[in-house]
Length: 132
Image 1 (tube, rainbow, N blue to C red):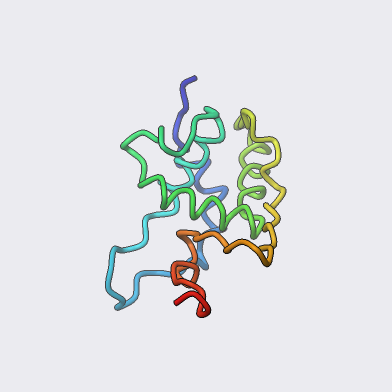
Image 2 (cartoon, one colour):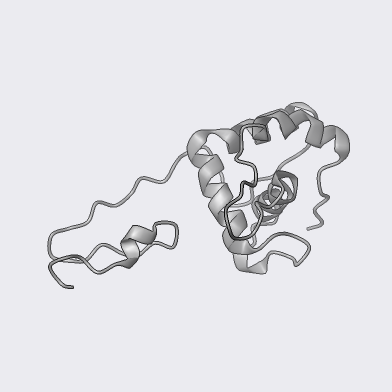
């Protein structure tokens, strides 16, 4: 399947959704990737049905795109993107991902197993106090 990145008029429909995103401050590290390139990457994954690891090199890194996808899915931004673009005639075929608007429910940890380490939560990288 061929995917076309957002045209300028399509980006104008959704650009306002990203005005409140944090800008680069005097913090160290890499600058935040532009929302437009991440939106294109997320739409590529949703439209093609491919995994994040197959993301073409013209897009930001898969972890960056996946993290923003999770953020946007949780706060409703993703469903608003799909709604606005769909209302303008952009056909977005969510191949195998019909549950875009449903946020994932976290699995509560059980007492007899350790909670998994998640790359988005640095606190989970540390061993529990009773094991350290």
